[in-house]
Length: 139
Image 1 (cartoon, one colour):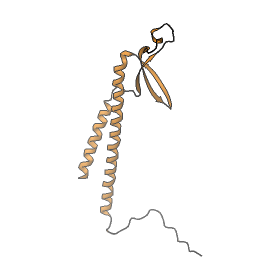
Image 2: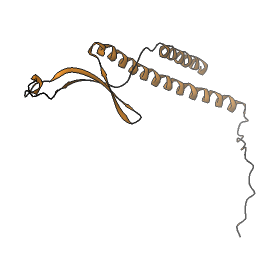
Image 3: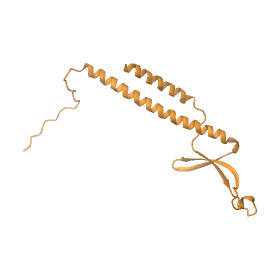
Image 4: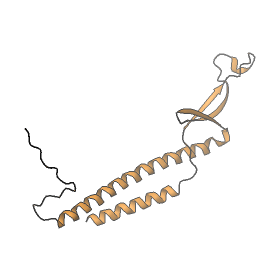
């Protein structure tokens, strides 16, 4: 029965690997719409309550503990969103792959332990690979 479960987990693992191989362009980060003020006192953005110039789009992410921001052109916003969704898909698939591999490794370990335990004599204790030290007397 465990051989059947192992085969199913192997098939599941292979399918996850296939899906990972099909991952397209991806990027991580947060996409934000921003408006800015240019600083000219006569510009429409200087009026109270005005939104400002924009929107402009920026992609922000952490790289080696520092925040990195990249400006995304308006015509590339939808493509950037698709790339971010692809990154989330990548993360989900890798989580699933790790989980399946953990289960597979555990199942194989139990299967091997069951086989080695079946050949041992009933009531026998496992031998230690370390030599026993002579006991010291208390004086």
